Each structure stands twice: as C-alpha cells, then as structure tokens.
Length: 334
Image (cartoon, helix red, strand yellow):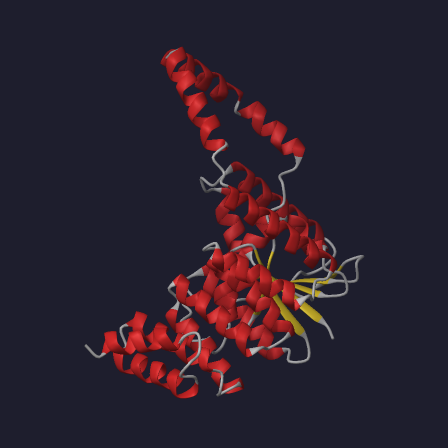
C-alpha cells in the first residue's frame, strides 16, 4: 500500500528535513504552505522560525532545478515530493473556511484521502490542535516534535544578540545587588519546587514512551499513556494516544474514553460524534450513553441529556456510573 504524506507549515518549520525522511512514499506540500513561508520572510516572527522557513525554501528551490514540483520530483530515497495546488478543492467538509490557511490544508488532506482509497494518507503536523481537527474529518494525522536549531545558527544568533545581552547585564547591575540576589533565589526556589507527583508523572511518561519506541503498535501501552495524560489534566495529549490506539484497534471502550477526554477539553460536539460511533459499534456499552449525557448537559441540551442518562440506567442500574446518572437526572428534573 502506497503512503501519502501531506505536510503542513508547522511540520516544515519544526523540521525542514522531514521532506527527506519518508522513503518510498509521496510527499505533498500544499500550495498554501509556500505562501505562508513567503509571508514569514517579512514577518516579525522568531528568528529561528524565519531561518527554518528560508531553509525549507532553499530545499524546494534546489529540487525545482530538477523539474516541476507540481509534477513531482523523485528523490534518492525513492520518494516523490510534490507541490499540490489548493485553488480547486471542490466540495469541502462542513465547518472549514478557505480563508484560513490551516483549513485549506485540512481540506486538501481530506480531498487527497477521498481520492486515494487504496493508499494510506497521513497529515503531518506539529500543531496539536491541527491534529485534533484532522481527526474530526476522518483524516489520519501524526504529530512531530520540534527539531533543535542547528548549532551554527545558534552561534550566529548569539553574535547578533551580543549587544542586547550586554545591555541587559548592565540593567541588572543597575538594579542593585539586592534585587539581583532576590531574583536569583526566586528562580532557584521555583526551579526546585517540582512535586513528587510531577516527578512520578515524568518517570511514568518516559517509561511508556520508551516501550512504544520499541513496540510502536502496543495498544495497551498507548491507552495506559493516554489514561496517564488524562489523569494529569493533559487531555489533548490523551486524545492523541487514544486516537493512535483506535487506528490499530477500534475498541468501544477506548473510543468512549477518548470522547470523555474531548468533553474535558470542552469539545462536546466532537465527543458526541465519537460516542455515536461507539454506540453504533456496541449498542449495549452503557458508559457511552452516560458520557453522551454529560456532553449534552454541558451543551445545555437538557432533554437529550436526560434521555442519555436514562439509557445508561436501562442498560446498567448497578454500574459504576449508575449513581452519577441518578444524580444527574435529579439535577436536570428539578
């Protein structure tokens, strides 16, 4: 099965080399991404961001010497890098606004997915919100982490900023020794107030990620990591790993847990869409109805919330969520 990667602007700015990291595949760069890179050159963005934008432009310019990017350029890794027009996207999913660059990229990724049913299409982004929105459109998405800036560039930045640093040092000296010491102690104290719970979380997170680096399709570890994130109020990160698990195993409990994370994020409509899928897969899975009740109640849709809480109790009068359902019905019927 051929894999097609649609690369968004944030992914290219996080790691310009990503276009050469997908051998034996097709890499699509939406035309609107090039426009965003051009605007970046004259913006007041962070220097490292502007540098990366120029690096991407240099890479694409070098490729363009070998042919038309709109036709596709074959790399030595046997990948095809192609710039795709975003001028004629046809029917776009409801809720997308083509005046917004991110929405244009999402619309193109959706179109490529629909047009290539025999291929695996994945949107690559470093924007967590972009990834979550892609999931609501049934577009597979993966998030990459930001790549460290090259050392040579760091050195150049230091040289350019030397005068500013010296001025800052003089300013600190003018504030007086007392103020400087006060700032130092506040910084040190703040840096060492990490709680045992935070350390435990970091240790567990690193452990699960290490397991997944060795076993990337370990669904149980994905779900455990997602649960860890939700328990620590990192709901968006939890959604990411629930979604990865669902791509491997479309389990009703995993989907319901992901819907609950969406509820905690305040994305009630997305949660209800996922719960509807869960109910379709297993109409007897009671927790899906409870969380649908929660989502409707949060939306202020009282009749629908009552209906879902009642549906839960009809399926499971003694379950772990039964008392909460009864309390919700009492509250809504007052």
